[in-house]
Image (cartoon, rainbow, N blue to C red; front, side, top):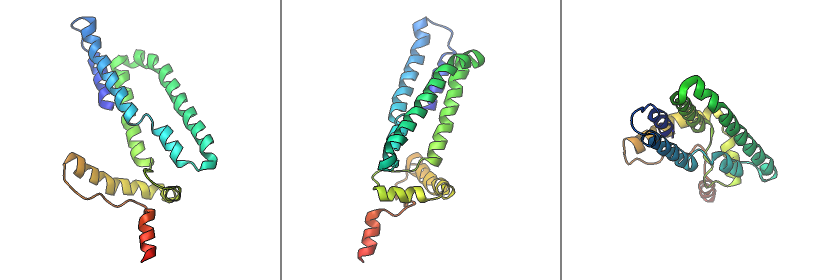
Length: 174
């Protein structure tokens, strides 16, 4: 996503050609950013809040998630014109691309996987101390991701930081 924001900003540097030729790439990269945002980080606040809060606090948690998301969307809308004048349009897009990379790093370090976990397992996930969780992400999952998706090696998925309920049930049966 940051690549598309950066590409949109760099596309603004083109000064030759008609207005359509100069604006076309910017519009394309903004659309591509929007598509990637909608598939990636965009719904994180809503989906995550709907999963992780206990039933009794889910309404309040979702309300806070929506409130914070809309507040920062408003801040973005208000600050962009000033950023555009202070840093130029290209600099503003570059700045927001940098913030996007920072957000990716924060999501990697602090957002825990909740896919296909029961509420009891979610309690286990959030009982792991943050330092231990970040250590696990950096020393186990980051090397796995690099080897599997960048180097394209066919390696086994590393163990999760918690024991899944069915694994615990199998241990108790034996």
